Image (tube, rainbow over all chains, first blue to last red; front, top):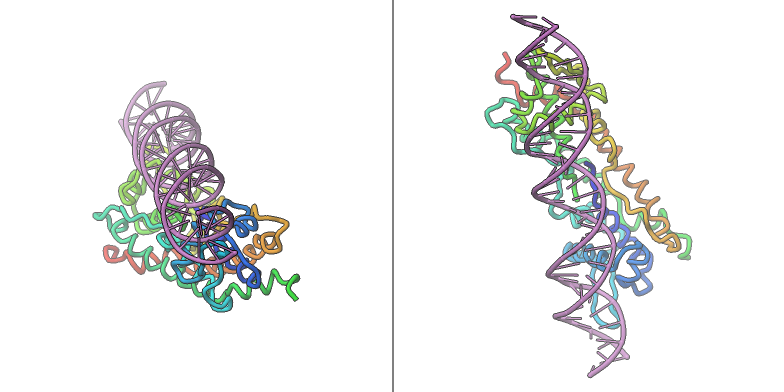
Length: 144
Length: 144
DNA sequence: TAATATGTAACAGTAACTGTTACTGATACT
DNA sequence: AGTATCAGTAACAGTTACTGTTACATATTA
């Protein structure tokens, strides 16, 4: 139970790093060092962020990764949508209930309604937090 | 990613069933039929609900399961807390980051703050939904 | 052409949940 | 007393998903 994947957190980490180091050149190996994970893991998450239009990357000797949008326009909802691709739902619904039972036949529908409401609230909260605000609030002291 | 466990949903199902069938006798086998799952699965979840003080059960020939509180006082937050015991956190944080990196060293703390805020919002939403309201809104037609 | 770094595929290891069986223990009815 | 019933619990297999890792293909720059 609970969300066992750390991809959302690592994705936020990557984006914050890119914003923090925007004057320098960021590679997947550098990100891997900051996150303390394998470069392939970073690239696996990068693929989703690229697909979602949040980052861009170039190939070759001077390859570099950078934000595809301004940091104050990338919200945690964008990151959530990008990393949670398949499993967008906050809670899993047991849909294989007994269709002949007055309760069982209606539970999936009922839960759908309730979870949608909760999730919308959560997403509104996420949409109010930007990468820029996170970096500025927590990782500033070195930049002048 | 996302929450792969259906225990929260099944727990809500169980509680709604108990409220709906409060004039009858509910057994774990009856619940298993409504949920369409093995009775042991039901009992596994019942254990958590009992521990949290949401249901009571008796043993013996006429054993029965019933709500330990009035249905309009049991909220989905109670159910969430009961079933998510260990994994209360909505998102997993990658805590094994690089302590020598200005970004990596601060990410876990930053994410803690953000996630706590989001989770509080979600929990407030859950605390506004009761078992009684769910049953009344969706599973009423048979009761007069 | 060589070096560098991303893109991608494949595989093992691990963790968690569900499904299932089987047994124990408590209670009520005969 | 004795038996039937049903909750409580433990144990195990099967499945799924994520992380960690290696290896290779691909694109770009020097």
